[in-house]
Every structure is written in structure tokens, then in C-alpha cells.
Length: 448
Ligand code: SF4
Image (cartoon, rainbow, N blue to C red; front, side, top):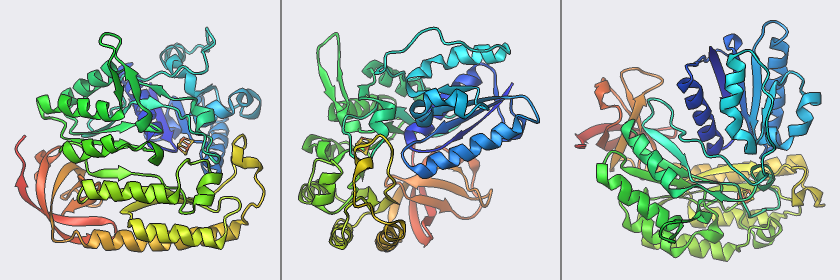
């Protein structure tokens, strides 16, 4: 039988889609990129922004129409399946199953039923705060893999739907994380990203020793674990809440060569007044002081962020504060978006909403400034020597190879190259920059 899956939203969703793909493959299913011919279509959804939900409504309508022409099973999973769970049978009759965030452990039974041509009937109600971590999120053949280490969020930023759809924070069992690392090493993975809505909230107590592992302790343990076999060489993590980014975490990044010098530190806004309305629990000054400590102790660190413009009550002065914060920090990259009210969140009822054209104009100014800064920072790296993990053949030219640097920069190696270099670390000389992709020449292939 064949399946097709489409994914919207954050890295957690991509990791969770990969775990469903892995489960289906282990049951003998084949992935079919052409959803028009698949026996099973899965849509993994996001509720964070209204635009993501609107797209999925369109996709559901498309597949519902397709069902009039041929028979297949349609599953919706992820945040929308959780948020609109009880509405699915009446509102979206074309969807056969809506699998909410806390029902992910039903997938095995669900697939058994689909394989038998039967209807799946759930057997028990799940407690709302339980979360199932699948054994692996690895995509076959990939040299990079996500490892979810926690799920959910307790922060309740006033604009954000995540705590309502993913629930409270649940940390993954430490032994399972270590087992997954061994599994990924066996599959030739070279780089891992520890994933969670707020990785700094990781907290796990070893029942044998009573030792409590917070995120810096986990990161250190993961660094010691991968050192033994030397197959995985880079560790990344995301996302971090600035209020929880401790000095001990800065020390670990500075001290452990395997932990990439890359910090994603969502600021959301540059005005303390707006940060307070967002319930972010730090001020502009707190944030800038944290950035200062990070830059001081991790030379050459790459800092990226998320910025949300057009929050209710935002003034021109607040916009100026955001622009000045962007200039002060000098971000290497940023995800920038404008505010959309999400029903059920604290900010939904706030007055002083910013008109749509004004939000868009403010966002455009932020994007223009940030793109200019990022471009300058990238240009300054031309001529330098970097280490690159070669991960695939270039999409545009099958002779060329493609990879990423430790700082996450994309690199293409021009000219004809041996495909046996895939999965290798190489030292490279950056020769140029096209858009946001560097061109480079291989200097030395690093020994394994
Ligand atoms: S920290 Fe805030 S923005 Fe991030 S997931 Fe939690 S509530 Fe949402």
C-alpha cells in the first residue's frame, strides 16, 4: 500500500511526520510523492498562524473533492486535529480520522485497521497531559536528524496557541534519548538537533540515581555520548526562551566543540511595553544583556530570532525600538511575521488592533533591515575557511554537492564531485555568495 504525507508548521511537526513515515515504512508501506495515487493521505497541520490553517482547509477541500473520484483514506494530524478535534466529523466529512496531539500512540492500531480495510474505533480515553514520543524521527538516508526531547509549553505567551494544542511541558525519558542517538549512529547520521518548544525547560529525574538533568546537563551528556563513536559530530538545539537561557548553558556551548555555535533566541519584539503585553517575561534590557553575555563567551556565535510585528497597541515608537534592537544585535537570520489573533489565546480579546495594511508595512520595514544585516554578515564570511557537512546532491545540478556549515549556512560545491563524499565533513574555502547560498571549494576531506 502507498501513502503520501504533507507537513505544515514547525520542526516538531516535521519530526513527528518523519516518525509516522518511519512507522508506515516499517509496516511495508511505500511513500508516494503523488498524493493523487496514494491509498492513504496524511496532512500534518499547524495552528500557530491563521494562514497555515487556511492553507490546510484548502487542502482538505481538495482531497475531499478527490474522494468523489477514487477511494483512499484521509488523516489529519497535528495542532489543528487537536484544536478542532470534535468539529471534524461534521465540519470536514471527507476526513476519515483526526488524530490529536495526545493520541499519537493510536497510529499503529489505526494503520492495522486501514490495512485490513476496517474502521478504527478508539478503545480508551487518553489523559490530557500525556504525550507519546515515537522511537525515532529519522528520515531514511538523511545525515541530519531531529531528536524531540520535550513537548508542550507552560509559558502562555499571550498571542500563542501552542500551550492549548500541545499541552503542558513533558520531558522525554533520558534513556530513550540516548537509545535514539545509538540508533541514529547506526544509520550514519552525522548531525542531530535536539527539539522542543522550549528546550531549556527540559527536566528529567533519573529514577535509579535521583540525579536531575536540566537542559545544560542533558546537552553535556549528549556531547559525551556522541564522542565515544565519533559518528555524530554536531549537536544543535531549538527553540530557547530567552528568560530560561542560563549562563551554564552558555558555558556548555562555549566549552563543547560538538555543540554548534548557533543560538536561536526568539525576541519577538524590541519594546519592553509590548513584550509585557505578550507575556514574554523579559525586558528589552534583559534580552540585550543576555545577547552580550552570549557574544562575549562564544566568539563567532551565530544568533537568529523570531520577530512578531503588529501586536495590538503597537506604536511607531515600539516599531523604532524593534528596528534599533535588530541593529544592535545584528542577527544572522530571523523569522519575521505579523500578528494574527488566535481564538482562545489571551491576546484575542485585546483592543487597539493594528490595521492589516499598517501591520504589513511595519513588517516590511523590519524584513528590509534584517535582510540587509544578514547579507552583510554573510558577505563578511566570503574568503574564510569553514567545516561543511556534505548532505546531498545539489537540486539544480547533479554534479554539484550541497551542505551546511556549523553556523547553518548553505554551501554549494561547484564542479564535478564524487558522490561518495555525501555524509562527510570537509574543510572548505568560501569563494563567493549567491543569494543566501555560499559557493566553496573543498580544501581537505576530514578523516572519520
Ligand atoms: S514560549 Fe511562548 S511562543 Fe513559544 S511555544 Fe510557548 S507560548 Fe508559544
